[in-house]
Image (cartoon, rainbow, N blue to C red; front, side, top):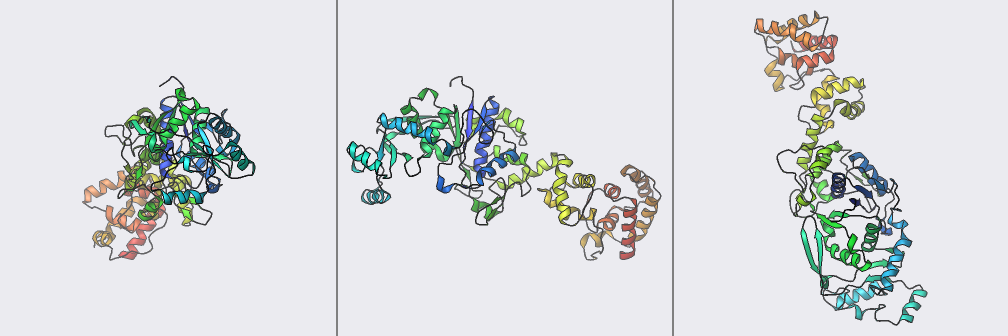
Length: 504
C-alpha cells in the first residue's frame, strides 16, 4: 500500500430508505477512516433516474446524524472534489467514455431489448462477450459511417467495455485475500447509455473513486463479482498505480435461516430493518430503530459486531472503543445472522448506562400522551428508579410505573400479591406506619429509614409488602422508601388511609 492519506467513501443510491446493511457498511468505513486518521466521503449514486426517490437523500443524511457517523466531505458537507451527486457529473463521465472509445477499449452497441432477448432465446446462457459480440449490432462489426449515421439520427445506443478473454484477474481483498477470476466469464458490461446520457454504476464508480482519490473501497459482498471488472477498468484508464484496496463485507442474513436479510423478515419477526421510520409515496410506513426506541449508541455497537469481533468477552463498546479496536482484515468471510434479540439486549445495556437526563424526554413524551404532565426533574427521578427493571425500551416503563402518577382507586382482592400480603393484621400495621411517617418533618429516604427500620425490628413487623399494596396496588415498583419520598408525605399518607379503609 502506498503512503497516501486514507480516503474511503459511502455511496448509497437514493431509491428508498437506507437498509440496516448499508448502515453497517457506512459504519465500517467510518471506523476504518477514523482509525487511520483518514477521511470519509459521502457520495450519492443517482444515475438510475427511473428509481430515484426525492426524499431518500435527506433520509439518509438524517440517519447518519442520528447515529453519530460523521462525514468529512460530500453531499451536504462540501469539499473540493465535487460535485458529489453522480447526476451532476455527466460531462466528467462523458470525457472518460470517449477516452475508452478512442483507444478501442470500448465500443458502441445498438442492440434493442428485443434483439437481445431473441439472442438469449437462441443461445443458452448467452452473454455479450468476445465470443458473441461479432453476432450483434455494434461498432466492432458495423462500418464507421453507418455507426455515425445511426448516432446522428438519434438512435439509442450503449457503450460496452471490451473485455479480452483468457486473463486471470486478481483482486486484492483485505478480507478475502487474493480473489482470482478469469476474464472469460465476464461479459462486456454496459458503461454508458445514450437514453439518459448517464453512465452505469461500473464506470461512474471507477471515475469517481479515482478523481476523489479513494484509497480503500469497503462495500458489501454483493459487489464482489464486479471487482474484477473494476480492476480491468482501472488498468484501461492507466490508473493501476492508484487503484484502491478492496474489502467486501459479509452479508447480513435472516435471523432464522439462510438468505439475505429483508424488510419482510423484520415485518414477520417484529423488528426494524431501517434506521429511521420511512414514509413511502404510497402511504406505506416502515418501522425505524429511532422511532422504536433504540438508542443510537446501542445500534452502532450492535451493528459493529455483526461480522467482526475484536476478540475477548467485552461486548459493550463505545464509538471510541470501536475506532481503537477495529480491524477490517478480521471481518468474517461468512454471512452474519441478524440476531435482533441481541440488538434489544444492547439497547437495555445502554439504557442502564445512559444518563437519566438523556432518557427523560422520551418518557416525558409517553407521560403526556397519557395525560400526565410533570416537571422534568420528577420524570428523571422515575426513570432512574425504574430503568433497572430489565426494560429493553423506554416505552416499556409506562405500565411498570404508572402508579408514580396515578394512585390506586380499587384493589383486586383476587390478585395473588394482594391476597398474600394484605393479611389480617395489615390494616393495623399500616396505621402504625402512617403514624410514624406523619411525625416526620424530613420525608427523605434516609429520614424514613431511620424511623421505620427500628420500629420494624423492635416489633418484629414486616410491613413492606402491605405498604407496597397501599401505595402501588400491585407487586411492582422500586424500594418503598424511594417511592414514598417521591410521592411525598401527604400523598403517601393519603394512599395508606385509602387502602386501610378499602381493604380493612
